Length: 357
Image (cartoon, rainbow, N blue to C red; front, top):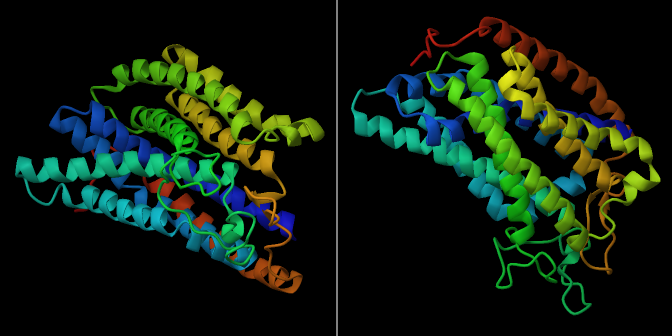
């Protein structure tokens, strides 16, 4: 049951980053490339019509994590308290940026909320990438200092950064040079995904320009990916062991590489949906490759005093997991019905759709 719920939660998180990921990316594109008011309006609309339904998947993932792996949930929600609060505020300002920009026709009013939408989206993409960097790097479980454990083995607390800004420190912070690299990969990946979404869902005047932007961003992503693999070996020399011991896990990096290589042909791709599928493969491949490299660990420990958190030592009882399965099925049926209806109502270009202000 632990493996089942692990796969299910990983799938829900992947769906969230695919769906809300294009909202983050749309905000980044809006911030840097939308200059004309018509483009700003329609690009904001391509995110605004979907953001609230997309975030349902994050709520679902959080609920399932609390139910299936309560020890892990308690550990990360206390340990990552500061960045989680920042993420909460960024989600709020991204949403109100979208919802308030059209309330008045004053240009200064629109500019304020456009910046709120764009900057919040950029920082959300960065912080979610930093969060993944913290997961693959590990944390100081138990708050061990000079070999002495200050807290229980599953507890930790991270400052936003430490004086050394190093992931190799005994007491690492949330932000260091390694997690920043992973954060930048997240920003570039979601910017590509958002650009593909804008091209797919709008008739914006910058759509042709965005294909050149995607090509350049893909070059940057390739360089960052190769560099991250190198520094990952410095931070965690055993990071690729799972792929050597279980060769079938190579399928996940292959998914990522398929999207990465395919996007180099963005200017030749005629069907916009195909480009969106390729950037989706980037997200799915990146997340699954990271999780596969750790499995069954879900939060490594940077000290030798405490064992890492795994799907086995943080899971609820078998009875709880089995009972939750029935409620989970009901919840998923409702979630999929909601998503299917919304996507059908919003299919096609959104240029002339009413945002409903």
